[in-house]
Length: 219
Image (cartoon, rainbow, N blue to C red; front, side):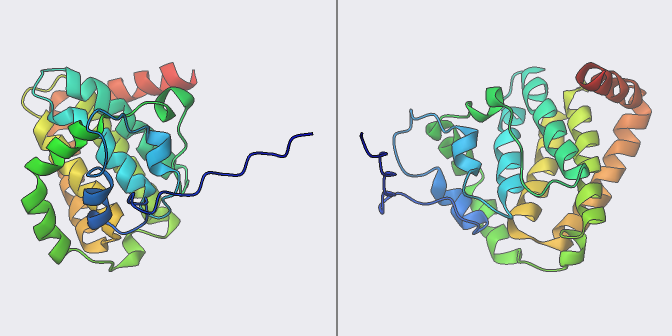
């Protein structure tokens, strides 16, 4: 009778996925083969409080691809999935298999991070854990999820010249979740409500599209 295989010890030279905010985000994609595909399940498995923030950060990457319609079609539903789980009170993301076993190449993430490296490092000096009442309690967590659903739906809609705008707004949500910064989250709430009122109500598509989306998923 063979004994069960012992788990492979972690590579001490490889950055581990830990809850350390922006610094870990910058480090985790910088080590290894640029052609290696980073599976979302692997990226998120060891994260705790920052798991939703990292998931959101990865999910919005397609929104910055300059191909009309493609970014929103990919990023929008992922953002809605994240928001729905937060709205339901989940503290860690749940990934269906077809998402868990997919992810970006390390080189793609590295190039994206290179483009935003300077502002990210500046934000790293400004952001810090504060005002946990806007992040930790279930009502605040759920309200952030509701706003992510609405922004995700707006990102999915064919509204001209809005991919970068919504992508940047969602990036700030991701950073607030990563750094546990309630001040930034409050600013995100204000910006998201303004975006929903301006783009959603004025376009007249937000309510109908949201209802149709939930009917397809849960009907």
